Amino acid sequence: MPLVDTFERALGAILTRVSVSATMSPVASMAVAYSGGLDSSVLLHLAHGYAQAHGIRLFAFHIHHGISPHADAWLAHCREQAAQLGNNFDSRKISLTAREKNGVEEAARIGRYAALGELCREHRIDLLLTAHHQDDQAETVLLQLLRGSGVAGLSGMERANTAPTLLGDATLTMARPLLDVSRIALEEYAMQQRIAYIHDESNADPRYARNALRHAVMPALSANFFGFQSRLVRTAGHMQAAQRLLDMLAEQDWQHCRDGDCLYVERLRLLDTDRCDNLLRYWLGLRGLRMPSSAWLSELRAQLLEAKDDAQLCVIHADGQIQRYQGRVYLTPREKVDPASLAPISFRWQGEAQLPFAEYGGVLHFDPAEEGVERAWLQRQDLQLRYRQGGERLKPAANRATRSLKHHYQALHIPAWERERLPLVFAGSALLFAAGIGMDCHHVELHGSQRIRLRWEAQP
Image (cartoon, rainbow, N blue to C red; front, side):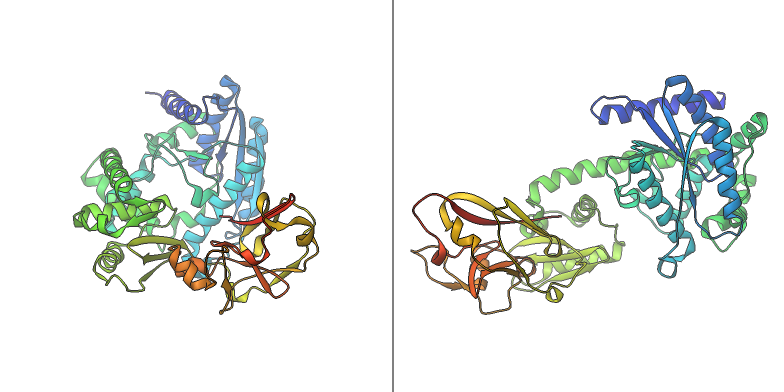
C-alpha cells in the first residue's frame, strides 16, 4: 500500500477516535512535533496534504534544545520549510535543568514534551502528531526487553494516548500515525518528494542506549532475521491486548477493595500475590505515579500486608508516600512545601464568600447558616490562619466536651499526615475553626439572621 494511503488510513482512524472521546466534535486543528529530521519532515509533508484535503488547521512545533551547535540553524530550517508549505509554525527554546539527575537524553525528552504541551495549550490544539515509526517501535520493545520490563513495558508505544505527566494536559491526545511504516519507506518517500531534512549528529553517538541498539544490534538482527521489526511490532500489539485484560481485572479488584481513594488492607489480603501486585500497579497509575520496580512493589506489598496493625507504616515512592492507617492504605503526594515552614497569615474578613490561601493549599469558605458566628462580629475580628502548634482544644457543640484536636482527629479517623495539612482559624487568641473538625461552639450564636459558618476546601 502506498505510504500516503497508509498514513491517511491511520490518521483517519485516530481522528475518529479523538472525535468520539471529545464529545463527537470533529478535530479542527492538529500539530506536528517537527524536529526537522527525516521522520518528522515526512510526517509534516503527509499531514499537510491531509489537512488541506479535510479543512484542518495544521501547526508545526519545533523545540530548540540548545545542545547542538547547529540548533539555531535547525530552527531556521524548520521555520522556512513550514513557511514553504504554508503551515503555521511556532517554537520553544528550553534549557535542560534536570541534566545531572536524568542524563542529557532523558532531560531533553522531558523538556521537549513539556514544551510541546505548552505550545498545544497556547494554540488550542487537541491532537499532537509525532513521527514514531515501525523501527522506533521495534527498538522500544527491544530496549524494554533488555531492561527486564513486564507486559506494560513490552507493549511499546500506543497508536494514540494521553500523556498528562509528559505534556501537562490530560485532554491532549498524542498520536503516532506512522507506527506501521518502516524507516526505509520514509527514506524512499523523502527522496521521491524531494523533502529537505536535517541530520542530527547526536543520532550517531553510541553512548546513548537507543543509538547503540540502532547501529550495532538492529543491523545484525536484520541480517539474520529479515523483517524482524514487523514481528516485534506485532508482539507489542499482543502485549497491549494483554495489558488491557490486566487493567480490566485490576479495575474489578479496585472496585472491590477501594474505600474512596484508599484500599482496604483486609481485602488486599484476599488476593494472591500476582493479582495484588497488578492492583497496586493499577492504583499507582490512577494517581499518575511512575511505575516502580518489581522488587520495590514486592517490598511494598510485604509491608502493607505483614506489618502489625498499629505500625506507623510509610513507604517512600519517588512521587509520593504510601501509608497505612486503621486498616486502609493511603497514597499521598510528595509535599512541595514543609508545613512547618509556613508562617501564620493574618487577615480581616470583609464579607467575601471565600478566600483563597494558596500557600496553605486551599480555600476558606464563609457559608451563610442558621447556626454560626454572627456576621458583624466576625467582620470586626483580627483573624489568623495557621497550622496547629500543639495543645489546641475545641468544643464542637454545647453538649460535647472540650477535647484536644488530636482526640477529635482520632475520633474522625483522620490520618496523622492529613492533620498536618488542616489549618486552624483563630479570632485573636481564641480558636474559632479547625479544618476537618468544624467550628468551636463558644463563638456560635444560635439565634437571629446573618450567621456564618467556616468551611475549608483543599485544592489539588
